[in-house]
Length: 549
Image (cartoon, rainbow, N blue to C red; front, side, top):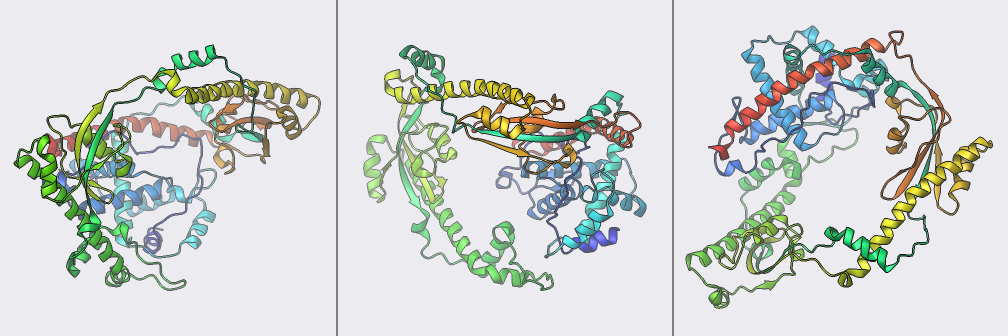
């Protein structure tokens, strides 16, 4: 088994995962928290030790992160953010360190094989190893990958050891029968549903508001119309395009840039049917023109930032007063460009709304009236502060049309919720008279657009893809033959009709009872281990943070 996994992953990295045990509480070792990032520490120090790994080494960091990503793909089969991967990487490194400290032995071949059989990519609807999925997965693997046999073996070996460490650290994991019952009811109840989707845009009630109502809405919602503080400033721009001429990176610089930015230059797709090959020189040659062009643009941006920084430094070094600013800039043949007033939340539109530029502008004042050289989308800029316009509350007359539109929309949403109650009652009456749900819903909706969709019987663990997510909260308290309340969202309302509902056995006669109990017990037991690992990771990150030294 392990040899096949290793051999297969040498040719494939992006996995196609099956839908697994939806709604069940499944042990998940990601601990997502607020943790210190790596930030720009490389500018301050060449080393940041994290359990004997240098987080500021691109090679070390890339290897650790890719190992974490492979592990997540193998075990969990769901979308994982960069932040989650980063923290999971920290956990895997900390776990390896702690396992060594506790002298935990390396896993045996049998342990590795058993672990592979529990990987979620091979789990069937009942959560057991599924040979059909195993074979289908093997058939689906195509294409090439930089992941090697050694990478897969290393990741699986570390994951087995990490799981052993967690069991060592875990608590008892007490589970009650009611806990198991709740999971079984949620995951295995079979529903036969129809879903009615009501279009909010087509709901057009006659809304007429008096001046008293408009004034009251404005008074009650004044915070929505407060004009935030704004900075009025000018800018001295340094377009990167002005610095392209004369930039000619060497071949070594271009190759270094390519190696440092692999995601910017993906490996060209192999011809259909061609064997996967690993030839770094050929891969680079195929994208060399794009690499050189990107590097020229990057070097031009760096030159623009340097020119802007030089201007800011000259202002500082020369102790240039605001009164002398015009002649100072003229002597250097640069011009001021006026910017439209902007807030801290929304930076100047002329500079792409950059929050970095906005924050820098709000740090300026009459005494410190120019910024440092700031990078922009197209180069760099130095801001020249002119004025800070204080926050103010506009009079109703200034913004009456906006207030009126908001008040009407607010009233429409209130009535839409009331319409949902009326619609539900109308549907229930028509169902009792023998009408189908589709006919009952359409007639009860009147002129409002409504779409009805019915689904064959399903359980949450194998739900249809086109079921609206709102359905799952609506059916929690729904019985057979029941019509749910309408759940309103920004652009629609959803009502669900339960044509049938079949609940599973929730005692030990259910073959899944013992499995779910074990899963819940494992989940609860992991809480202590998770807490220990989080503390260990956070403590090491804090210790090694250059900013804290």
